[in-house]
Image 1 (tube, rainbow, N blue to C red):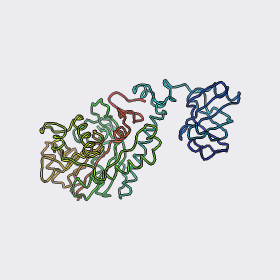
Image 2: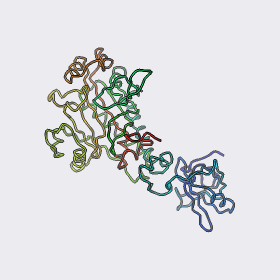
Image 3: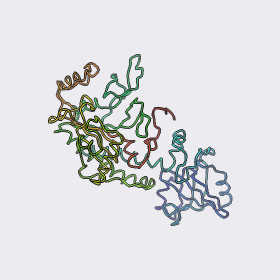
Image 4: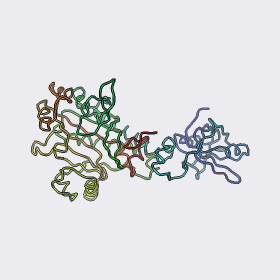
Length: 428
């Protein structure tokens, strides 16, 4: 008999089926016992009345893996309106050692640190696994949207020879006796691949050795990177980003609707046109001094509240960041060279995306590095490609964990990350 999932039970009313999963909970009443089985499809209620089977169930510990064979009957009070009766129960392994928290409770009451210490079992809780299902759906929507627009997925090195990009700290390692570094982003490579495919994207890990110990930072996170050629300016990039976000949100709503329901959240609406303000206007809205070179988290929160109040939007573009705060490869605004053709996208008051138009002329790269007092040598392999013809181009990068955290309302990105790596955590 082929195994089915708990989510498939409604289609098998009256039939004998085989289920397999984990003992989620046991409820032992005087005349009947209930075994709640958890599998990849959700929860199934198994009704036990036979004394011998009841004795088996009483001896089981939570999280023990078992097989159940029984008959499916309708019951409006049971999960999905069905339950399994007259079962046989067979353990598929030794009795499990129960985790240090109750996975059957609606809310995982253990502190976040305890959850992370015991991540392999904490992630089994429906609230934790729901966030990961949402993450998977978001990535699926990201890929599908860009595939539909003629983008090509690429895979670039995560070990690089240069330690410099945008001033961020890096993780050093030994590469057969030579110094090497974990990549902070695929930025240089995805730009170079525009010269091959015109439109590219990548889903992969990036590494930042910045000493941040906050609820929004990780030392390793998943970056959704996009780069496209033949743009007029950064507004073409923003248009692709808007379509990409809409595709991600739609796929989450479609493929992870059960996970959204588990967490009690709804997918946000992506406006047909996301409101945008220039950096100088953003400072005024946030009540920041006009001399501020960047937006602080408090400013982002104020801007998020303003966008929701004035435009009914969870999203807001901030364009024209000062060139002094953007990487050397950022294209300046031709009309206001002190400001960039770059942008950030705020999602519910938190920076989610950084992007913009890039330089595409070799001479401009030499001038930009010279203006910052940086040598060309560390970037030679990258900059040299621009001698061979590169189109005007630009791109963006979405932090996946931050996106899911904002979408689900999680207070900490670690709540939506399977095995987070940060300033203090390197295990499990």
